Amino acid sequence: MAHSNQVRELMLDHEGIHLSDVYTGAGEVLTGAARVAQETRAQADNLAVRKAHEREQRALELKRLDLMARIQSLEAQLAGIDEEAALAQIEQAQRVAVSAHDAALMFRARGAD
Image 1 (cartoon, one colour):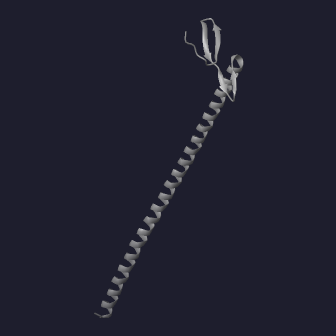
Image 2 (image 1 turned 30 degrees about the vertical axis):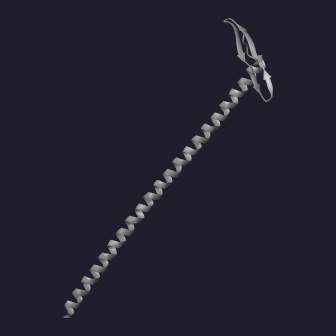
Image 3 (image 1 turned 45 degrees about the horizontal axis):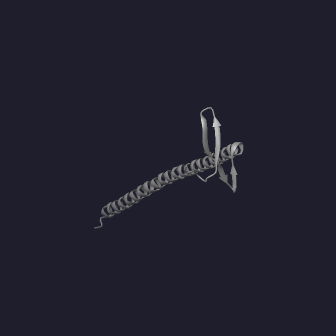
């Protein structure tokens, strides 16, 4: 009969006999309570890594949102400056037109051409 040359753990429980993979890592083969303890530590480590990654992602998202808010604020300030510049240009054009009109009226009042 064919059989595996892999190391397995024979487990007996209320459902019968089972073959379970052993924990192999760091040059060790663990079975029983040592395997369960190591698997629990590995799961905790994986969870800690996953949680750290999630925290990092949340921090990056908060930074992104902060920068987007700053960009919107700067864009609003820029729009205000552009509007002020356009109004100043219109006012300057109106001042030049009024000044030219006043000069023309003054010339006519003096009897000049």
